[in-house]
Image 1 (cartoon, rainbow, N blue to C red):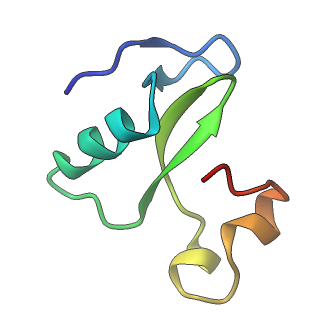
Image 2: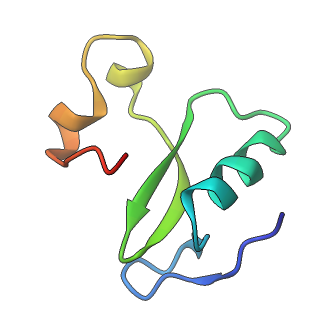
Length: 69
């Protein structure tokens, strides 16, 4: 699946749904350390901070966001 538009908030590739972003992430050849996250009404794929990847923190502590699930 390809990205559907550009996010007006941050200018990154955007997916309309979380499911679409997760499917696109699965197609990445080296997806380790990446995550799907919401932004400006869209969903993005991005790298997790090192402290989250190493288990010293979780992303909600770092970004102070609610889990939209």
